[in-house]
Image 1 (spheres, rainbow, N blue to C red):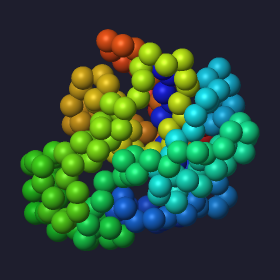
Image 2: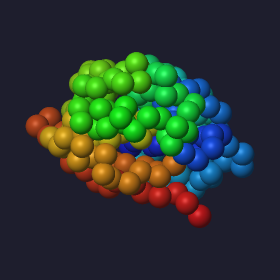
Image 3: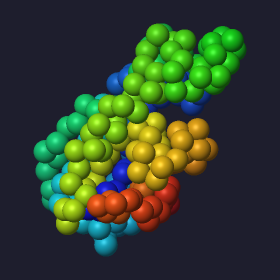
Length: 195
């Protein structure tokens, strides 16, 4: 199975604001342009298009869908971004340093914001991943978020989340994985669709 992870395009939110569960529309004009994303994926046309239920992801998926003439039939709640609880909508600079330090000290388990832990998100994201039929000849396009995409990479490649958190991931970027019966292979990470 071929899986192309696609990060949603730029949301309508000020730089430096914490958002995960916050439901945001896309910034206008849409950037990067969906036709650029589709053009980069000419060799991997989708047989299925799956999206997180967040507005920024469903709007991105709808724009991509129009360019490949494939309806979005699967909205997958397990592909949502981490819920940052009380931090949602706040500037990162306004969040108390001790709370950020607590979170950094226990990346997988801490929940100083009262939302989800990375471990909880990882469990739901990998539960979805484990339902995929690696022997299928399908090419799956998955529109999601930076957190779940890094978690999927960690899961499939046998890495830690702290490792994949270091990997750059732009808005509208694509990542390609080949899922085999025994292991997954990374084709590329963070293929940019910027003009």
